[in-house]
Image 1 (spheres, rainbow, N blue to C red):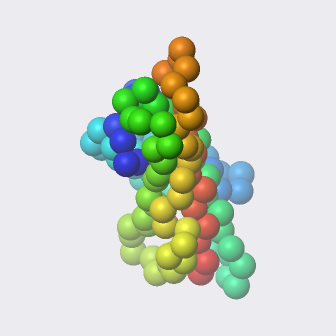
Image 2: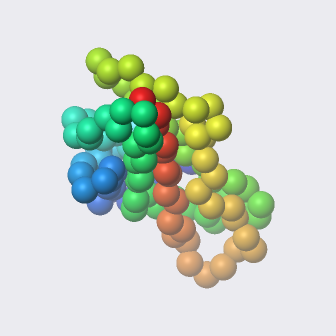
Length: 110
């Protein structure tokens, strides 16, 4: 994320029917280790991250909350450059609550 993560758990990465819980490795990084998935061959594998909360009141109106995905391991996967960083939300006029959902969808092609 390009801002600190507020919540202390509950992050989920899913691909197909598989889900993996995440851990906070720094204030802006949630890691998912040992993610099981079946390479799709010539198709696409779509990874979706849920339940990452940030504080929109810490940023000005119009600020874009983004997330960057990466895959590290002993496999070779191509991630199209346009899918590496995605806008999860954009700040509107400040309101009375301070949480916004930001999700990152990461498409991988094998």
